[in-house]
Image (tube, rainbow, N blue to C red; front, side):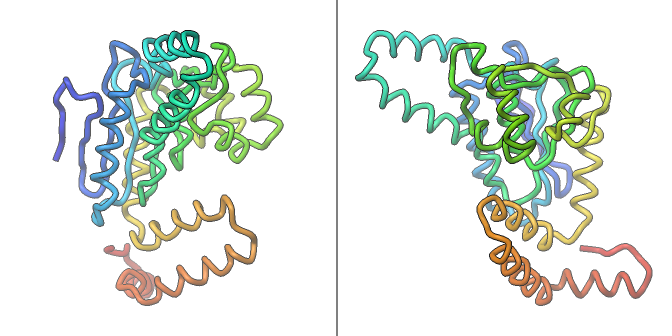
Length: 270
Protein backbone atom coordinates (compact mmCIF):
# COMPACT_ATOMS: atom_id res chain seq x y z
CA UNK A 1 0.00 0.00 0.00
CA UNK A 2 1.38 3.40 -0.89
CA UNK A 3 0.40 7.01 -1.17
CA UNK A 4 2.34 8.79 -3.89
CA UNK A 5 0.35 11.94 -4.76
CA UNK A 6 2.96 14.55 -5.66
CA UNK A 7 0.78 17.20 -4.04
CA UNK A 8 1.05 15.60 -0.61
CA UNK A 9 3.61 17.02 1.80
CA UNK A 10 4.20 13.64 3.46
CA UNK A 11 4.07 10.42 1.47
CA UNK A 12 3.50 6.98 2.92
CA UNK A 13 4.70 3.72 1.40
CA UNK A 14 4.29 0.28 2.92
CA UNK A 15 6.45 -2.77 2.27
CA UNK A 16 5.13 -5.63 4.39
CA UNK A 17 5.55 -4.68 8.04
CA UNK A 18 7.65 -1.56 7.31
CA UNK A 19 6.34 1.91 6.46
CA UNK A 20 8.39 4.71 4.92
CA UNK A 21 7.22 8.28 5.54
CA UNK A 22 8.74 10.72 3.06
CA UNK A 23 8.87 14.49 3.53
CA UNK A 24 7.75 15.75 0.14
CA UNK A 25 8.42 19.44 -0.47
CA UNK A 26 11.68 19.17 -2.43
CA UNK A 27 11.41 22.58 -4.13
CA UNK A 28 11.61 24.19 -0.68
CA UNK A 29 14.17 21.68 0.60
CA UNK A 30 11.47 20.08 2.77
CA UNK A 31 11.12 23.15 4.96
CA UNK A 32 9.41 22.43 8.28
CA UNK A 33 6.12 24.23 7.68
CA UNK A 34 2.89 24.16 9.67
CA UNK A 35 1.15 22.40 6.77
CA UNK A 36 3.82 19.71 6.61
CA UNK A 37 3.59 19.28 10.38
CA UNK A 38 -0.16 18.71 10.19
CA UNK A 39 0.30 16.17 7.40
CA UNK A 40 3.06 14.41 9.30
CA UNK A 41 1.13 14.17 12.57
CA UNK A 42 -1.91 12.77 10.72
CA UNK A 43 0.23 10.04 9.19
CA UNK A 44 1.74 9.17 12.56
CA UNK A 45 -1.65 9.11 14.28
CA UNK A 46 -2.89 6.50 11.81
CA UNK A 47 0.21 4.37 12.28
CA UNK A 48 0.16 4.47 16.10
CA UNK A 49 -2.68 1.98 16.31
CA UNK A 50 -1.39 -0.40 13.62
CA UNK A 51 -0.49 -3.60 15.47
CA UNK A 52 1.03 -5.14 12.33
CA UNK A 53 3.63 -2.37 12.01
CA UNK A 54 7.23 -3.33 12.87
CA UNK A 55 9.41 -0.38 11.80
CA UNK A 56 9.11 3.11 10.29
CA UNK A 57 11.65 4.89 8.09
CA UNK A 58 11.67 8.68 7.86
CA UNK A 59 13.03 9.78 4.48
CA UNK A 60 12.82 12.87 2.29
CA UNK A 61 12.35 13.72 -1.38
CA UNK A 62 14.82 15.79 -3.37
CA UNK A 63 18.43 16.65 -2.60
CA UNK A 64 18.00 17.70 1.03
CA UNK A 65 16.53 15.87 3.99
CA UNK A 66 15.36 19.23 5.34
CA UNK A 67 16.72 22.75 5.15
CA UNK A 68 15.10 23.60 8.50
CA UNK A 69 12.22 25.83 9.52
CA UNK A 70 9.98 27.50 6.97
CA UNK A 71 11.44 31.00 6.51
CA UNK A 72 8.06 32.50 5.63
CA UNK A 73 6.69 31.25 8.94
CA UNK A 74 9.72 32.51 10.87
CA UNK A 75 9.46 35.95 9.27
CA UNK A 76 5.74 36.19 10.04
CA UNK A 77 6.32 35.26 13.68
CA UNK A 78 9.09 37.86 13.90
CA UNK A 79 6.82 40.52 12.41
CA UNK A 80 4.04 39.73 14.90
CA UNK A 81 6.46 39.68 17.83
CA UNK A 82 7.86 43.10 16.86
CA UNK A 83 4.39 44.56 16.41
CA UNK A 84 3.16 43.46 19.85
CA UNK A 85 6.20 42.33 21.88
CA UNK A 86 4.38 41.48 25.11
CA UNK A 87 0.90 40.64 23.87
CA UNK A 88 2.07 38.24 21.14
CA UNK A 89 4.51 36.31 23.36
CA UNK A 90 2.06 33.76 24.87
CA UNK A 91 0.42 33.23 21.49
CA UNK A 92 3.76 32.58 19.78
CA UNK A 93 4.91 30.35 22.63
CA UNK A 94 1.78 28.22 22.34
CA UNK A 95 2.07 28.10 18.56
CA UNK A 96 5.67 26.91 18.71
CA UNK A 97 4.83 24.30 21.35
CA UNK A 98 2.09 22.89 19.12
CA UNK A 99 4.38 23.12 16.09
CA UNK A 100 7.05 21.02 17.83
CA UNK A 101 4.47 18.41 18.82
CA UNK A 102 3.34 17.85 15.24
CA UNK A 103 6.80 16.80 14.07
CA UNK A 104 7.91 15.13 17.29
CA UNK A 105 4.87 12.87 16.97
CA UNK A 106 7.49 10.54 15.49
CA UNK A 107 8.48 9.78 19.10
CA UNK A 108 5.00 8.38 19.76
CA UNK A 109 5.38 5.57 17.25
CA UNK A 110 5.48 2.27 19.17
CA UNK A 111 8.02 0.68 16.82
CA UNK A 112 11.65 1.54 16.00
CA UNK A 113 12.11 4.57 13.76
CA UNK A 114 15.02 5.14 11.38
CA UNK A 115 15.93 8.52 9.88
CA UNK A 116 17.49 8.11 6.42
CA UNK A 117 19.44 11.37 6.13
CA UNK A 118 20.50 11.26 2.49
CA UNK A 119 21.18 15.00 2.22
CA UNK A 120 21.52 18.15 4.29
CA UNK A 121 19.51 18.24 7.55
CA UNK A 122 19.59 21.61 9.26
CA UNK A 123 17.93 23.15 12.31
CA UNK A 124 14.41 21.88 12.91
CA UNK A 125 14.88 19.31 10.16
CA UNK A 126 17.81 17.73 11.96
CA UNK A 127 15.92 17.97 15.25
CA UNK A 128 13.17 15.78 13.80
CA UNK A 129 15.77 13.22 12.73
CA UNK A 130 17.16 13.30 16.28
CA UNK A 131 13.68 12.31 17.44
CA UNK A 132 14.06 8.97 15.66
CA UNK A 133 15.62 5.95 17.33
CA UNK A 134 18.35 5.45 14.73
CA UNK A 135 19.97 7.72 12.16
CA UNK A 136 21.88 6.79 9.00
CA UNK A 137 23.59 9.74 7.33
CA UNK A 138 25.20 10.49 3.99
CA UNK A 139 28.92 11.15 4.06
CA UNK A 140 28.42 14.33 2.02
CA UNK A 141 25.43 15.58 4.04
CA UNK A 142 25.73 18.69 6.18
CA UNK A 143 23.86 18.49 9.47
CA UNK A 144 23.52 20.76 12.46
CA UNK A 145 21.39 22.88 14.74
CA UNK A 146 21.96 26.40 13.47
CA UNK A 147 19.24 28.14 15.53
CA UNK A 148 21.55 30.66 17.19
CA UNK A 149 22.91 31.62 13.77
CA UNK A 150 19.44 32.93 13.07
CA UNK A 151 19.31 34.72 16.41
CA UNK A 152 16.83 32.13 17.67
CA UNK A 153 16.86 29.91 20.74
CA UNK A 154 17.10 26.20 19.79
CA UNK A 155 13.77 24.41 19.53
CA UNK A 156 12.12 21.12 18.54
CA UNK A 157 13.47 19.48 21.75
CA UNK A 158 17.09 19.91 20.62
CA UNK A 159 18.26 21.08 24.07
CA UNK A 160 16.78 17.88 25.53
CA UNK A 161 17.75 15.37 22.83
CA UNK A 162 21.29 16.45 22.05
CA UNK A 163 22.84 16.19 25.57
CA UNK A 164 21.36 12.71 25.95
CA UNK A 165 22.86 11.56 22.68
CA UNK A 166 26.37 13.00 22.87
CA UNK A 167 26.80 14.40 26.40
CA UNK A 168 26.39 17.91 27.81
CA UNK A 169 29.74 19.36 26.74
CA UNK A 170 29.66 18.40 23.04
CA UNK A 171 25.96 19.29 22.91
CA UNK A 172 26.63 22.73 24.37
CA UNK A 173 29.39 23.36 21.83
CA UNK A 174 27.12 22.53 18.89
CA UNK A 175 24.15 24.47 20.27
CA UNK A 176 26.10 27.58 21.33
CA UNK A 177 27.90 27.84 17.98
CA UNK A 178 25.19 26.59 15.61
CA UNK A 179 28.00 24.69 13.90
CA UNK A 180 27.24 22.63 10.79
CA UNK A 181 29.14 19.33 10.47
CA UNK A 182 29.45 16.59 7.87
CA UNK A 183 28.22 13.02 8.03
CA UNK A 184 31.55 11.57 9.12
CA UNK A 185 31.76 13.98 12.04
CA UNK A 186 28.14 13.29 12.98
CA UNK A 187 28.88 9.58 13.31
CA UNK A 188 32.11 10.17 15.23
CA UNK A 189 30.18 12.30 17.73
CA UNK A 190 27.38 9.76 18.14
CA UNK A 191 24.70 11.72 16.31
CA UNK A 192 24.24 8.90 13.79
CA UNK A 193 25.13 5.23 13.82
CA UNK A 194 26.37 4.82 10.26
CA UNK A 195 27.77 7.00 7.45
CA UNK A 196 27.25 6.00 3.81
CA UNK A 197 27.28 7.48 0.31
CA UNK A 198 24.07 9.44 -0.20
CA UNK A 199 22.49 7.02 -2.65
CA UNK A 200 23.02 4.12 -0.24
CA UNK A 201 21.34 5.67 2.80
CA UNK A 202 17.73 4.78 2.03
CA UNK A 203 18.53 1.22 0.84
CA UNK A 204 20.56 0.69 4.02
CA UNK A 205 17.66 2.02 6.11
CA UNK A 206 15.31 -0.42 4.39
CA UNK A 207 17.69 -3.29 5.01
CA UNK A 208 17.98 -2.33 8.67
CA UNK A 209 14.19 -1.99 8.99
CA UNK A 210 13.75 -5.46 7.49
CA UNK A 211 16.26 -6.87 9.98
CA UNK A 212 14.32 -5.27 12.85
CA UNK A 213 11.04 -6.54 11.39
CA UNK A 214 12.38 -10.11 11.42
CA UNK A 215 12.82 -10.02 15.22
CA UNK A 216 10.07 -10.75 17.75
CA UNK A 217 7.61 -7.86 17.35
CA UNK A 218 6.34 -7.88 20.93
CA UNK A 219 9.89 -7.92 22.28
CA UNK A 220 10.95 -5.08 19.96
CA UNK A 221 7.98 -2.93 20.97
CA UNK A 222 8.69 -3.65 24.63
CA UNK A 223 12.35 -2.74 24.13
CA UNK A 224 11.30 0.60 22.64
CA UNK A 225 9.08 1.27 25.65
CA UNK A 226 11.97 0.46 27.98
CA UNK A 227 14.45 2.65 26.13
CA UNK A 228 12.04 5.58 26.30
CA UNK A 229 11.43 4.97 30.00
CA UNK A 230 15.17 4.87 30.68
CA UNK A 231 15.38 8.59 29.89
CA UNK A 232 13.92 9.35 33.32
CA UNK A 233 14.12 6.05 35.23
CA UNK A 234 16.51 5.04 38.00
CA UNK A 235 18.62 1.89 37.74
CA UNK A 236 16.27 -0.06 40.00
CA UNK A 237 13.19 1.21 38.18
CA UNK A 238 14.67 0.08 34.90
CA UNK A 239 15.43 -3.40 36.28
CA UNK A 240 11.81 -3.71 37.38
CA UNK A 241 10.62 -2.59 33.95
CA UNK A 242 12.83 -5.16 32.22
CA UNK A 243 11.55 -7.93 34.50
CA UNK A 244 7.96 -6.87 33.82
CA UNK A 245 8.49 -6.83 30.07
CA UNK A 246 10.18 -10.24 30.19
CA UNK A 247 7.23 -11.63 32.15
CA UNK A 248 4.97 -10.49 29.30
CA UNK A 249 7.36 -12.10 26.82
CA UNK A 250 7.19 -15.49 28.51
CA UNK A 251 3.40 -15.46 28.02
CA UNK A 252 3.65 -14.80 24.29
CA UNK A 253 3.59 -17.08 21.28
CA UNK A 254 6.64 -15.16 20.08
CA UNK A 255 8.72 -16.57 22.93
CA UNK A 256 7.53 -20.12 22.24
CA UNK A 257 8.42 -19.73 18.57
CA UNK A 258 11.82 -18.19 19.36
CA UNK A 259 12.84 -21.06 21.65
CA UNK A 260 11.53 -23.66 19.20
CA UNK A 261 13.53 -22.04 16.37
CA UNK A 262 16.73 -22.22 18.42
CA UNK A 263 16.14 -25.88 19.26
CA UNK A 264 15.38 -26.73 15.65
CA UNK A 265 18.27 -24.70 14.21
CA UNK A 266 16.12 -22.51 11.96
CA UNK A 267 15.19 -18.83 11.71
CA UNK A 268 12.16 -17.89 13.82
CA UNK A 269 8.85 -17.15 12.09
CA UNK A 270 7.31 -14.30 14.07
